[in-house]
Image (cartoon, rainbow, N blue to C red; front, top):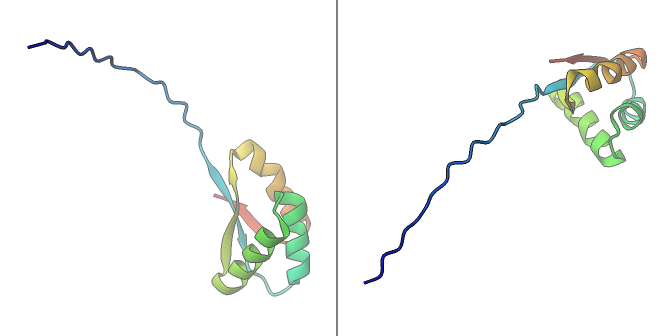
Length: 91
C-alpha cells in the first residue's frame, strides 16, 4: 500500500470591486430613430446593429440600458446624450 499525502493550499485572493453603473436611455416622442442611432454610435461606441437594437428596445419598452461602466466614464457620455436632446440618466 502506498500512502499519498495531499497538500492543500488555501489561496486568498483579493478581489477588487468596481461599482458598475448604467446609462439608461428613455423613450421620447421627439427624436427620430436615425438621430438616436447616430448618437449612440458616436457617444456610446455602439456598432450600428447595437444602436439600432437599443433604439427599438427604447421605442417598445420605454427604456434601455445603453452603456455600463464606472461612473467617471459614464458621466461625460450621459452629458453628451443629454446635449444631443436624448433623455438619459445614470443609475
